[in-house]
Image (spheres, rainbow over the protein chains, first blue to last red):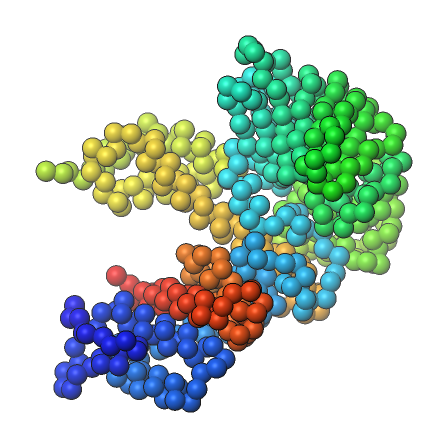
Length: 357
Length: 173
């Protein structure tokens, strides 16, 4: 590879008279990149355009780089902005409103939902234990505690000399703690972004969900949901035996939650359920109950157990249903709904839409 | 004299380590078929790297490093696929592209995603605002609260990365 001496401005001295010597491709690319950065600024002058043209003509490698740039431009041009921007924008920069501003809002009930930002998804998918949509898993921890992971759940363990901790990133777990064999015994904690929960010898269920998804259960318990936006993420705790001490991350006092009680919390609000619920969550037995439930709320729950997107048309969102549904076959559940409600199911790859008949 | 790892040695490593490695991968991808594929890819990569035999005294750590990279690639593909599905789902059905168009767009998006993968997030975001939204550097600087000089720097970096990929794909090594 023959190297040519370069001047400060992108590649002005390249290409001597006569035989064209080869140029270092890395340098050519760097010069091309500098030119392109000038040309795309929105303030490129006519003179800069001419100088760039001269650079292209100066050497075949420059021309090749320019062609590659045009192909790149072609690729960007071939994808509709409304699709490309939300998909390619790095997760932490993604704002739902900005990405969807050119798209009319339709009721979307995704298996994962927009409210879980993609950088969280990274963390969750590298977790020690995780389940896919529709999957459940039973795990025995090093201290003999039993955990059941529900659909689309991810958690890490942190077991060491001083603690027995679960870090729940998303989804839902049922915990049955065992007495610590170590002396002195270590506290058993479940940590979520919303706060931490300490088990005081207990059986309990923890779920991370959107405020929209929590609404129906909060109301069903006779309580009033706090001023959450539908896409806020909250933590739901349901204690079955003994007590759990909850410390929400808003720094308020510790709450003690007793058997049958439910509490929903995040960094800003805490909501205690009204009437107690003594039964274990039905998902442990693979069943989804609906008790005079709105169709859109029901589909939101069902969507957790499926991959792909489940969408509910606004016209049918308010239809009510009741029943006990087996979660092992969600297609069957949808067909059953279509038999009893005035709805139609439209199936596309990865995308199912429930609409009026 | 260093001797590269023979395929016999790799075969032995596969026998001894294939099982736990697959479990390790499966805990991170759930799907057993994908776990098996990624596990095998790990050994294929190991073979291709021609690692000297001495470096494989502690195969576990080495295998995990390779497997971790493959798992990350897998999840990056999953993340972008989910983003794609979410985005499609938010479209009113009347403007949903046809099946063929969707496939073409999806393939291009995957290529672009792979190209941009090595860029730091800020550089990537700046580049997309310029190339997809068509913003000037002045607008980008204002929106992201950075200097125009920084925007230009990010743009140079992004173009370098993309051109490298575009040219490499034309002239395979």
